Length: 475
Image (cartoon, rainbow, N blue to C red; front, side, top):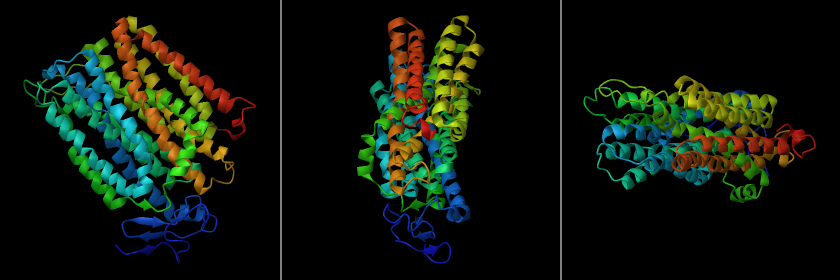
């Protein structure tokens, strides 16, 4: 590939933009180099953005969504596979099932820390190819081990842990996309990217029951739960190679990341994100198990035919709601929308507890769908708060953030997404503890309600209350 220049003449350093030259290169033309590297990227430059910038950003966003979507598929495969294991001849305790559900979230959350930095080191295109390729490990391993009911639990747990590769993809994908879009459009772009990824949880829970039962005869064909995704993973690798780009302006700033970790608001925002995204991914992973426990007639696998688990609806509505949370945050402020989300989440969790004794599946499903919608809106709104808070703290809320502030915010996006993802481990384990100690899930849901009320109060006190330091910035 030969070097090409967008426009008439390139200006500025071919190594990209740094904080010291950002102002001078504000109107620099884009420079394309071999390996699909782009120099002088600055989406805050209106001329660049309305010219070649927006189509480039949109193309990268589309393939980022697809790769991240498959990451979520792999991340959530075990949430639906475990429900089918007893029918396939596996003998597992309730505690072991909850561990198979929660271990991918634990590993995925931990991987988000290095994943959040690697884009700036090797490039978004390059890392998307690599991270998509890593998804072949958990899918092929799953297909191998679930075909034998004598597989030891320790082996199953190790293979389930590999699914954490899919959870790590979110951090690198979101950090990459935040470099491509201007501040005024980050909420919608990040919301779409996240929602497209989140949909993978729903698709996995919809597709797996179908593929493992069609033509299965006298037994479930569980290995297909892994094999069916391999061609799509290969397509994602090819698409990233052929159509995505690396940005030289996306520089790693470890000093800035260390500074972000010392920022109190990073930890406050991470706490809020545990409440929103952690609840979404936690409830999405455990929803098939809850349905199987409370309403087994709606969670059966029809051997020899096609079976559909209605658990996919929860992750579906939560995913679809996420970009609207970002858009509402752009219009009304992320803190206010986050508060509203926590209020509805608390109401939804209470309704689940209060209506469960009725034994009515459709009421149970409706209450949970309300809870999922609220988590989705909260995901988008809370995530939108992150760059806004960092810009306000840097004194750059008006006139556009500096490149240094953007890099710090990008690092914070990855770090907060990592911390928040631990909710995907905590929610199933809290439910497991409640079941083990009380024989039911009511105590866990009352705990969730209390947590949402506290998080609502924190959001109001720090970001909305008149007289607070950041209230004037309409976070």
